[in-house]
Image (tube, rainbow, N blue to C red; front, side, top):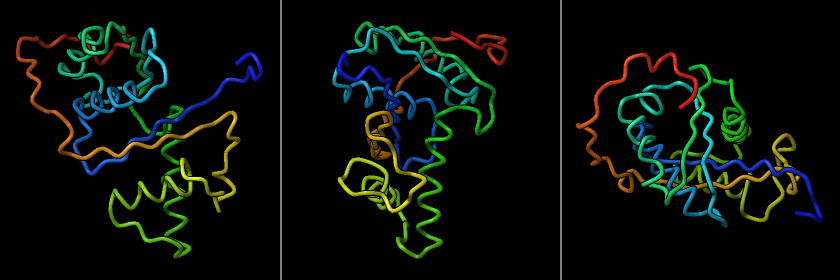
Length: 178
């Protein structure tokens, strides 16, 4: 805002019982995110790793090619980093969640057995429920860093999209932008 011109770093973290983590899951989460934004973005710029099951497969690229139709005229630019963990800012956001949950377990403060329990833990300790985190390393300056958590049920993910009309594009492993 003009009153406070600092850039806000907003992390949207999706917790799910779904273990596939495929392109259908990615698209479901993207739609959930867009539907929950307080504004309509003019475009989507995505920074992703090169995981083929999520971002570089024929089906993931088919979703990408249809982004303007699927997301209300909003084009998508997808940039790929190398396929490995810990190379992008999102990996750090996930690391905060994993570290907080692990430390809670080690300290025998909270036992987390299900994705629902992890979601509740995150809402209380790291995010949207008004409680000061007991983890000093996870406290955030609320004006510059925000976390929003979403719970995704496996049954909510539509895996019936058919992309059989698309053909494999050779050389996608070497792409860094689409």
